[in-house]
Length: 99
Image (cartoon, rainbow, N blue to C red; front, top):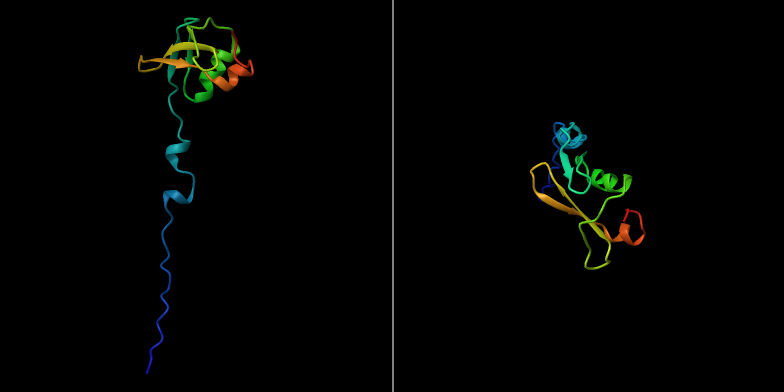
């Protein structure tokens, strides 16, 4: 006589942090501060768009030019005092950034 396999009842799982937005992504972070080496001012660097916004809001003297599109490049120091460069070929070709 062949026995029918028993159907297992699915175990109800307790809610986890993955069931909603993870608290790590919604908690507020202390804004990081960067230092622009062209205009010698500080700006927020919490989001990538903050850097773009800084260079878009006022004209800056570029430190050098991009090897690919000859667009302006700018230097700034991040919150860890590391020199970073800002440039976006797409934005530069469309003349969305100054210089």
